[in-house]
Length: 137
Image 1 (tube, rainbow, N blue to C red):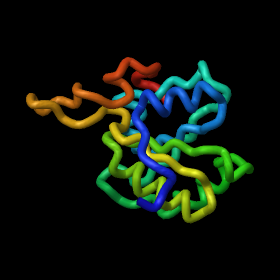
Image 2 (image 1 turned 120 degrees about the vertical axis):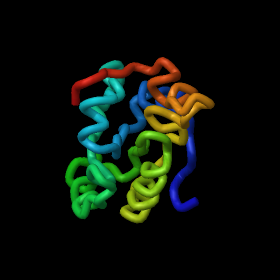
Image 3 (image 1 turned 135 degrees about the vertical axis):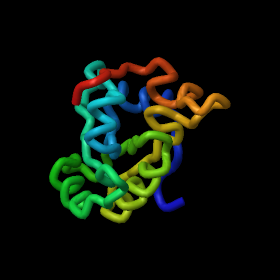
């Protein structure tokens, strides 16, 4: 593992509520618009929305630049990376670590893994009942 560690959505929420961390949602614009976004209004920090890839799996060539521009000046501020199920966010957390950030991967992601019926309703940020805004960025 080339980042600070893996954490659950509940652990991420606790870090966000403590004010010690910033959430970085690396899903696509389409996912934010149609599936929803984490609602962090109860925390001290607004989330960052920086896609790791674009629709169709095309890598975002500006990810590093956008993270450096939007990320906290204090590289010691913990960054919590979130995607759909925890795969893209792991890669983004590793990239952020290479920039000197303290980065964690939210393992279950926003939607979690598919259940027996193929639906993403088993775990993840939204399925654990954490604050969510649906259909808006």
